[in-house]
Amino acid sequence: MATQLKNLSDFSHTTVPNGATFKIAIAVAEWNAEITGSLYNGALKTLLDHGVAAENILSIAVPGSFELTSAADILLKKHTDLDAVICLGCVIQGDTKHFDFICDAVAHGVTQVSVKYSKPVIFGVLTTNDLQQAIDRAGGKHGNKGDEAAITALKMAELAATA
Ligand code: DLZ
Image 1 (cartoon, rainbow, N blue to C red):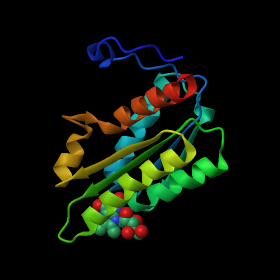
Image 2: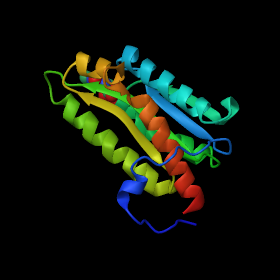
Image 3: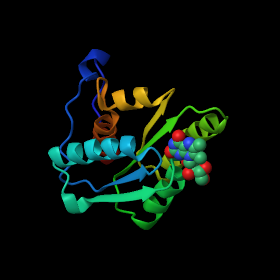
Image 4: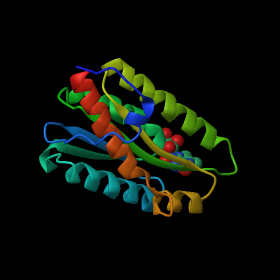
């Protein structure tokens, strides 16, 4: 049962729940694979480090970030015992409007899927101006956003189980 929040500062660094009872899927986009591979490795290691059993981690690849929405939808429809889906991708600004369409679509898409199934669907998609910004966030000077996506998945799976 959720306890009452006393002070938000008490919760800014809540401990990461143990994931021994969770089943979590990771959907990763193949576009910008050198970046998304690092995000994936970070997310996978973080889940394992926090007790998720290897056999309870389901990994799939999709062509691009745009496909992450349907991947999450397919996974949650087929695997009703999943506790969360982590969506990993990297969209880098180019010369056309593709960037805006993909980013908008996947952000709204994963939100809709999450609400449809009442399951956490985590937005682990880098949306950067250039390749260097992506490198910096995929194991570089700004950490690995794949790790952060996995921690968010664990926290939200715990919330869904206990709220
Ligand atoms: C087409 C496209 C472009 C231009 N850029 C990216 C990108 O930076 N990151 C990414 O994940 N995917 C990109 N894609 C592919 C789209 O996500 C999608 O796979 C195609 O539009 C087919 O639906």
